[in-house]
Length: 222
Image (tube, rainbow, N blue to C red; front, side, top):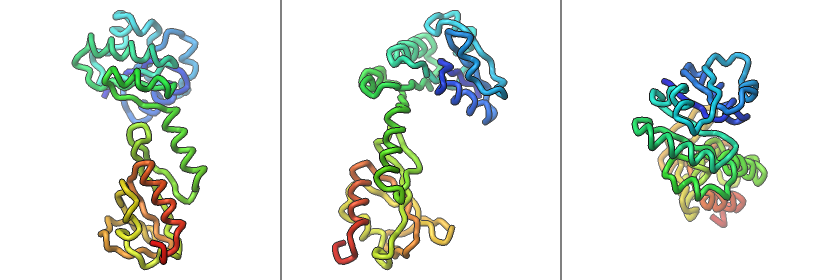
């Protein structure tokens, strides 16, 4: 597969190298040649210096052949304009993803109807989770943190109760897996919990907060 990364800041350079490590063909575009110094020494993709808003630069980057384009400059407005230009002039390139740097600009980017990744919002969401309760560990985030997957450890006071009893009243929380003694399974709602189990759930932030509060309760309060 072929990918184009526009913007070779720290984020773009890291993304380009990760794609390269996974065996993909990668072209990195930036207006400043010095930006390519951020790329890992082992990176063997192609670099294109030039203004990403010009047809000439996009043509040299072979955008028309790309399976996906990541627009990752440090300017949200520039990302929106570049992404819109690519969508307009290269309609066959369907997978155009914009980086959102400033959360205050997110609504503006969403108006363009393209996939958006907010590294700031996502990072803040993950750090918040770890600060509030390190035993309730976030492992995955969908979108920009609206829905996440979490691993939580079952304390002794919840032993012998069922998954359904634990999740009851917590709102939008779904059990994804139960790990016991290193072995994971897809449990039934009536599966009984054992102290030390690791429960993986998918939940909204509201659901996670409700579940955290419930875990602090004793059996008699469930």
